[in-house]
Structures are given as C-alpha cells and as structure tokens.
Image (cartoon, rainbow, N blue to C red; front, side):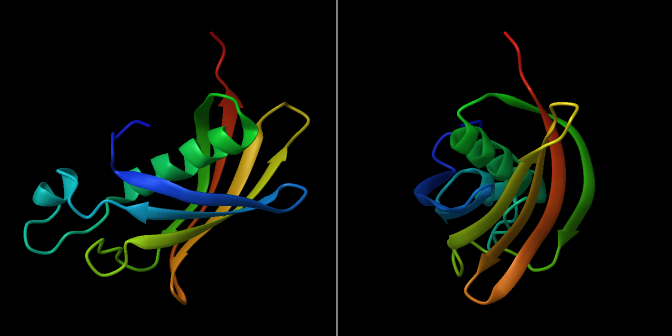
Length: 125
C-alpha cells in the first residue's frame, strides 16, 4: 500500500470471470485530508487511481506498472467524512500483448464517483 492506513479493503468478491467487486473504507483521519482540503476533505483523484491499481494487484497477485489511461472521469467528490465506504467494480482482462486492462467504476451509495480505464504491465524484478 503506497499510502499507509489510507484505506482498508473490507472485501473483494469475484462476480464472474474477470469481474470483481471490492468494498473499501477510507480513513477519514488520514493526514492527506488535512491538506486536501482543511475543513472540507476531498479524496485526491490520483489516490483513487492508486487504489484501483492496488486492488487489481491484489486480485491478480502480481505487481503492476501503469502503461496508460484511456478514460478518466471524476464524477462526484468523495468526502471521507460523508462517504467513507466505496464500492469498486472492476473488469480485468489481458490482451495479446500481455497487458492488463482494467475498467473501473467507483461509487458510494447510488452515486458514481469515478470511471476509468487503465492499462498495466506486470512489473518484473
């Protein structure tokens, strides 16, 4: 985890082949929210992108490096004091070039907060 104690994974369920549903809880007391923004905390978009990567790594049990992002839409502010519990819907596939493609929709309650499509490659040691 890049940001220690930023969030915890409550559960990851396999919906079917290549489709996963993850539930996480943001730590509203994390130091990042003191600066982003004082009195009105907002979850940084780059942190959400990192969470998607880390959950994908956990599901696949591999280390990944991002190759590209083809679609990123931040559709709602994620305030951890109001909406700390998030659901990440992940569709993971591998193409003929051995790249890992991930389509993600992150939501809280009935609100879609983030949609993104990322491509990763396996990190070699």
